[in-house]
Length: 40
Image (cartoon, rainbow, N blue to C red; front, side, top):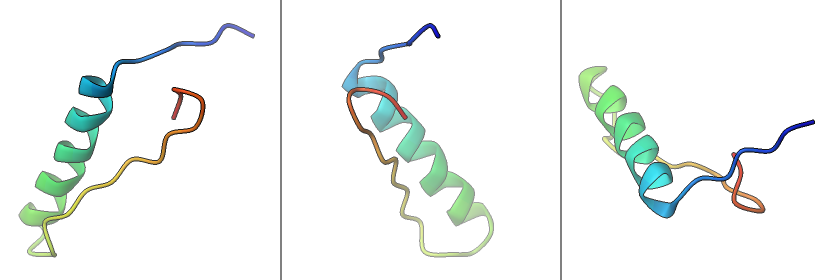
């Protein structure tokens, strides 16, 4: 199985996308991404 490693900027952008999606649904605009061993 091939593993993909990402930078902290990648994970921050993903969390920001989650927050934006929540905002667009009129929910609390908070996003989070759980990361273990540099992978989602």
